[in-house]
Structures are given as structure tokens and as C-alpha cells.
Image (cartoon, one colour):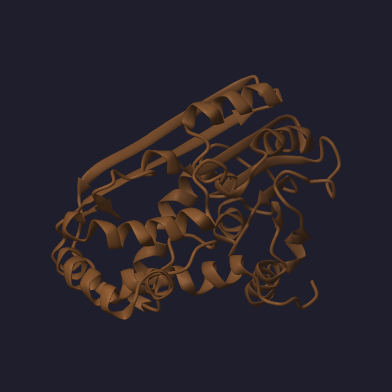
Length: 291
């Protein structure tokens, strides 16, 4: 891969999602390993069989496959050239580059790959950023060999957004409702709820899209949780963008609020965050299917 200007995907995935906190990075990675293992549990690659990891990111799934399946081959595919550069450098360090290919392509246009050419396809938190999810499923089906397997993990953003008007990130912001709305409006302008792909689907859409693409055997597991929020370091929340496309809360306040308004908003929200006086909501879906 050639050197490209660093993009939002690599900047967020490798740096910004941890909010500058090494402990948070380690905790997050430990939480992702079970996701990796569950995605990889739905197929068994034999020697010289090939996995295509679509939206490979930092290589969590792809490198996991190289550890789990002896003598398999893995194609790292991503829209981000920077992330492919990162994964390729890691593969050289791990001395597994002979088992790997690195191909830049979006999930809804896998034209570099021939029909019926791979044994398994995986994604992790990829379709949530893809507008044409139907096309992506069609591409997954096209490149898989007969009997090939698809295994994906996707957060279900529509479970958490939009929030009630008196909540912000799960916290009661009734005393600073107008200030919170200014910040919400900023985020909505950047990611319009009516058109952004993060919130335009749920688990039923994933099932429908997989079936329409041609998969004959499809399974889906939904995990949804509502629970009290855990106490959190304020600086981490302040400087961690929730996804690659939006600013951090600190950056959003700087754009949407006056300094006086920002102080008022922080003085209300910070004690709630640091004492865990909120509600945490999340939903994720695992889907696996056979061509």
C-alpha cells in the first residue's frame, strides 16, 4: 500500500476512540476480543481456504482468524488506505504477511474480488456506516463460494437514538435542556437522523437484506441491554468522539456554546458522569449465514 493522508477512519480507530486514555484503550480491547471470537465461531477455515474481512479496520477479526485457523489465508479489505497500511505493517511484524492480502474497497463495491472466490466473509461495525446495505449484502453473497459463510457484528444504533429530549448520553439534562439541545442540533446537522446510515436500520433489516441477497440459511442473535451507567472519567467522555464522523463533546461545545454556556452545561453534567447517575442503553446483532 502507498502512503495516504490520514483519514477520519484511522484517526478515530487508532487514536480518538480511546479519548487519550491508555486504560480505556485496554478495557475496550478486552471487551472486543469476545466479539472477535464470536464472529469467528460461525465457520471453520481449512488449510488454504480464504477469509475476506470487509472493513478490517485495525485487523481485530483478520488477525484473530490467522491465530485460530492454521494455514488459512486472509484478505484485509477496507475503505481506508491508512488502516490497510497499519494492518500490513503489523502483519510484517508478526511474520504472517505471506498469508495476507491488502485490498482497498468499500463494503458495497467489492469489485476487486471475483465471483465465488472466498470461503468466508466477516465484518465488524461496518454496515452501520454503509448507506446501501442491500448492495453490501449482495456483494458478500457474490464473492462467497457455494457453501461459503458470512459472519457479521453490527451495533444497532436505532436502539439508542434518538434519545428522549430530556436525556443526553443517558443523563438527565432537564436543568440545561436548551444548552443540550444546541449540542444535539450540531450533531444532527453533521449526521442527520433521517438520512444517516447509522440509524436507518435494525436487526430485522439485517435479516431481510441477507435473505434478499440470496442467503438460504440465516441466523441472528440480538443482545440488548438497559442498565445503570457506570461512573466515568469526565475527561474521557469529554474527548472521545462517539464515532468517526462527529466531533468530541469538547469540540462540539466549543462550536455550539458560548464559554459561559459551556461552563453551565459542564457544571451540571460532569457530576452525573463521574458518579454514574445515568442510564446505559446498547444493542448489538450477530448475524451468520450460509450461501
